[in-house]
Amino acid sequence: VDRAAGPSFGVPSVGVHLIAFTREAPAEGAVDGVMRVWVAQRAAGKSKWPLLLDPTVAGGHAHPLSLAESVAKEAAEEAAVDATLMSKAVYAGVVGMSTCDDYTDPEDEEVNNINLGGAGEADGVGGAALRHAECHVWDLEVPGDWRPSAADGEVGAFLLWRGDQLLQALRVCTVCRP
Image (cartoon, rainbow, N blue to C red; front, side):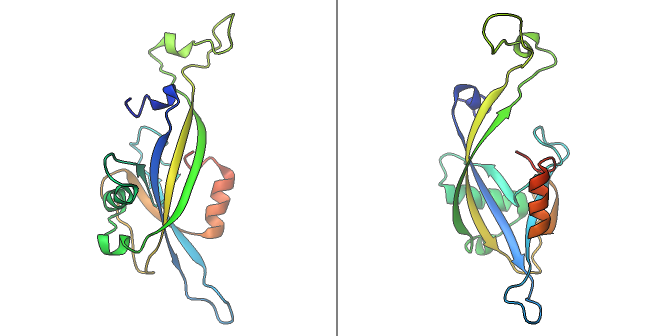
């Protein structure tokens, strides 16, 4: 099944994410320094969720690569993470997500007027599908002077945010991709 059609058949997608972060030196008397996370802003030309925020690196699991090979490939392509730095990444676990994708098409009335409610008029919901995904996540502490570089055009910019800034953005929900 083509991965774009997968949600229509209940097939979960598998992704790999890398969270690159750095710590500032602790202030006098503090135990820990301030953590800052590199956040990717998706390129304006992306077909899904343009200009929204993403993890430092986010991509699909490329068959037949292992998950670790997939995240290393994506990290090199999306953020120019070299193999030496990538070798320090630590697997953090897997996050399961379910979102509702809207497959409306302005040129396809048949798809746009699917009646999901049973008998009666078309409800105009369109080709909505519940999408299941599992994202395997790695954490990578990077040196304070390291800067990601958008190597493949999928990222418009990288932003270095404090943890509290990132939490606020996640609470707003309109600036981060689902």
